[in-house]
Image (cartoon, rainbow, N blue to C red; front, side):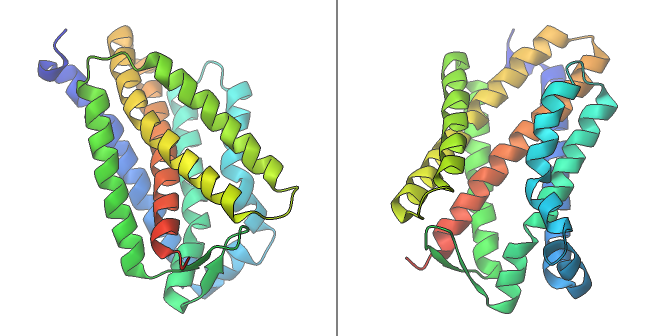
Length: 241
């Protein structure tokens, strides 16, 4: 089937991109509120709620792997918006640092001087890269399935390595290697996820329930990849090293 002239596929992909866009907009609004409204800042970062904000997204995703084996449109939508809301609140720390001139320091010793212009620049770079990678995944005739499977396993390995590194003395070199690995793998996953959505669309045509669930999962996967890329690009732009 010629995907370039398939109106149904285009409408489906636009639905995924629209949900991603709304998720990013909500993230920006919540981050701005959490970083600029003192009562909200205190609540999010100076109370036990900070643990929910910090670990909640990972917890929701892990729980969904076991509790949502046959997800419903409503359940998958709640998962997506729950992750978006928590991530948005957590990213308020970037806005707070930009507004107050606070210099942040990573565990590996990297100092970051943030500004609102730096955040905007990082977002534009990420959005441009995301659009190019997704376009490639949409148009390429190459089967990205084997590459995608490898990248998922590699990304999981990098995450595990990052967790293990927390139990050892801080290492700037290890932190840098993990950052670039996550950036490269997340970028590659954007193209693979786009192609996977195309294939899923043709398999589920006519199944409205399945299509609704796939739209939510597609938006969530895109969102996670986008945020991973954005965070690392922002850290690189703001780094004083």
